[in-house]
Length: 171
Image (tube, rainbow, N blue to C red; front, side, top):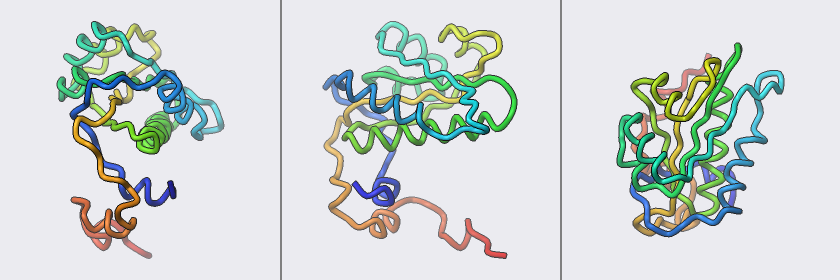
């Protein structure tokens, strides 16, 4: 798939089917995060790959939208540590995973946490680590539209986003 089309057509998926995501697909999604860029190539992150249903249910209580975790096939918590632009680095890794999932036909959604420290305890993170985001993954409950059924411009026009002129200022 064309990268720009993937970016323009990707939508959040919050409702997942019971269809399991093959291990090799899960690994490709995680590897897409692993190879993303980071500040000075320090990679001050760790990906906690959660497939255990009991742990997913416990982690569901730690995010704003518990249903996203209760129905997913697996989740990935991006834990960061150290100094520097860790939020940017976690975002880059997360976006790579989201786009890799979309390319595989797997839906995904980022999930914020009201209490990161409590989520970190559930995930077994060290004192130096903080969970930046929890990503949920699974095949969509409803069939997704074929990204190539529209042009990137048509996907963008259909997106619920602020107009270009409100977001971009040229100096």
